Amino acid sequence: MRKTNVNKRIAYGLTAAALLAGCASLAPFTGEGTATLEIQPTFNSGRLVQTMPEVRPYDESSVDRVIVELYRDGENTPLKQATVTNHRIPVQFVKLHPNTTYRILAKAYTDDDHKISDDASSSVTLAIAYNDRPTLAKLPVGLLNRGFNGQATASIAIATGSLTTTDPASMSVEVLDN
Image 1 (cartoon, rainbow, N blue to C red):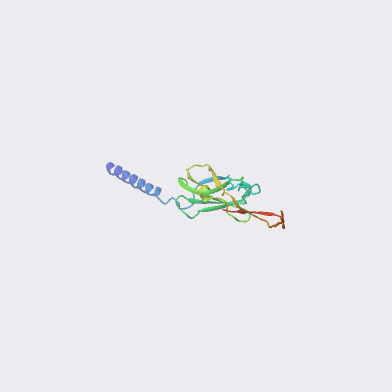
Image 2: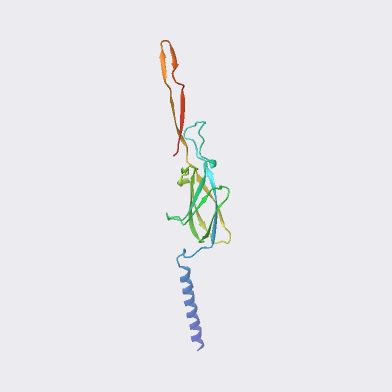
């Protein structure tokens, strides 16, 4: 009788262990997570393709807003998105799943809605650990290079023995957005 009770307890214990092991293998993205990610955008200025004193490269002061998108690593649809207008305040994503890798992408825009960041140099991939404190990270925002197209026009008339202009000389500079 005693041996049967021991065998039953062992059988119950093995069954419970198997059920608990099955719970651990459930899909990791059901429900809300418990992890927090706090990320600070940092700006890498663009450069001028040609030097011209009137044209400045894109820098942090050129940025009106940054859209920060959170992806599960390997996926192309963002899970969450935040728009940042104050670049000094970190972006916080909450209720993330621990022990998961995420990719964060930043897209910088001017006040007239031109995208001035390069996706390839404006993302970071992070593994979120199981922790009771937020994961802190920096997000590089690579700003595009800035080129320009300059033109000059003048009308001239050549009189016998002299060279004079009939119109004042003018020059215009056009800034090209990449």
